[in-house]
Length: 329
Image (cartoon, rainbow, N blue to C red; front, side):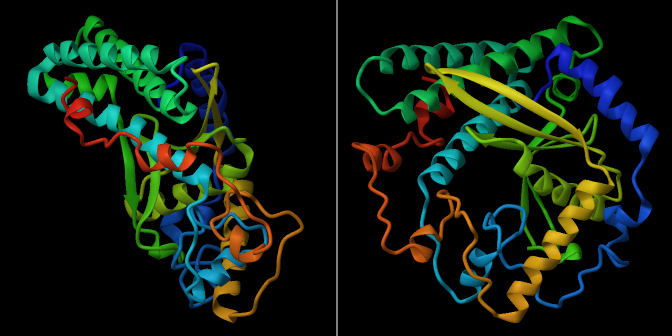
């Protein structure tokens, strides 16, 4: 899901990247200028919980509650999304490990694991199990096939013979990258779901959601990465994943991380830092996101009742370090 299709690559190269070269980004809004306005935080209180990942409340009341020590609940969508992200990231890690250990022969290992995941999906469908488990194994099978295809294509084009060359050409990404955001007033460890080093593209994955609300998070990640690395990050991608009748559908929203997106992030960051420093309750928004971990705190009379078997499934999702997945038996 991290890699563009042929059509998307053409759009990326001739559209978004061309716009980045033509329009450019104001130097004052590059992350390496974190010590100068407008990037320099105007409030002293850092965001203990990253504005990029933790705060989804329109008024920032979740940050206010966090500052009071009120613990978040584990919203259903957030738990499932975190597990699915881990599955996708683990496939990339497994693929790199297999190639490093066995070179191109590592594809055989990945083929066996893909076949295992596919058989698991076939057994689960129609068995009456929770749909979350089907989605988990469907995503694993889908990602394994995509990774295998990229490795085979990279090797067949020539110029990629050793393990390093194959990985650099087929899998030029890092997943679950932690970035130090303190230079921009954020937490010391904010996470980018994926960074593609060949195009310096930062990606964020959402399951069943819309891409637009996540663009400001992408802008914040880009600024933090620029501040830490000194390299320009002009392109972001929100990867929207849906499951239709058990099958994976992926939409990639490639976009320019321009001045407008960066300024919007800075304004939201400053507002959230103001909430934290003032200690004043900003109040409830007009509409509260049900996936917010503080929903029960703000709406104590509204009870969320889990669907049948939901607790069992969320408590018993396959362990990513279990031998069946780790070595594909």
